[in-house]
Image (cartoon, rainbow, N blue to C red; front, side):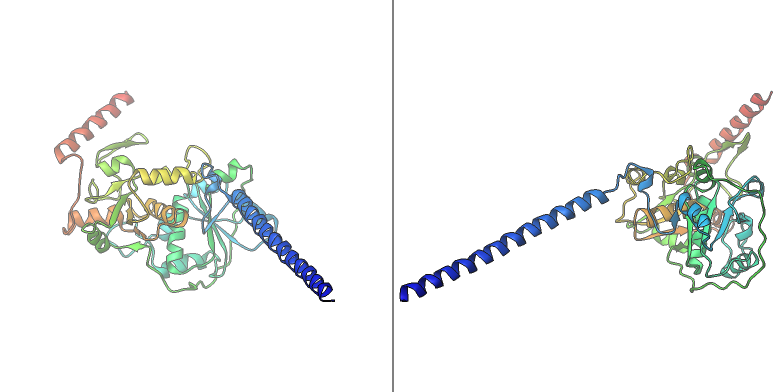
Length: 365
């Protein structure tokens, strides 16, 4: 009897041990399978950064997204930032047309500055745009003007909007149709949804402080000739410096990277790939551990670079100096208190300008 009880107890123990071993093996196998599934998912989600399609960002939509919004009958407003003649040749259905003078502030001694929140609200409201509208904004050149416009709206408190990657060039390249029909909307009262947020805006005082701080990079996003301060020819005309500025040169200590290096202006005007964007900025010495203040002639091109650094590449501290070279050169000539750098002196500048004019005259003969 005792032997039979021990045998039964031994048998039960073996069954219990077998159960626990089976459960342990099953659990381990499940963990292995879960890890493999996670690894597979990670592989599937890996982005090929050499493709332009690798660029994803807040406030950025693709042409196909916008086309789908039209097809699905979604409610949204469209803004084309371009000169009137470009708009009249063809635009997205229902688009309204703004150009730089429409949103330029009128309370400065120089041009190119942004409009005030009140001026922007009046512009939007007079064109039938409300604060709760979702806005699709695009332009005709690499999104540079669209992004500057969006930068202003974002700063002043409009919430729902996006730039269409590549603008009109990408829309046409993807086979979507334009219209010449002009849409007119009834005026509405526009009030920004949120209070202004100036964290992405740099003032002249901010730039002066950054010049003495090694944690900052001052980034000039203009054309090379503007940065160097040399005369140049554009569309058959010789210029000593870009119209609107008060002299030639750059802000002392700034480094150069052309805004257009971020987009495919020879193709569909979309942003270049993540790989290309990272390479270009790293090669110029612009890294995420630094604070950056970008500038150009009037805050347009530098707003584009500010967007690329913050929204696409994830830099934490980047500001757009909206006054840019126009304000800086105005103060240098008329008020003092700021310095400039140049690659050449006045005598060499005059000499090169005369040589360029002579070349143009000879070519016209």
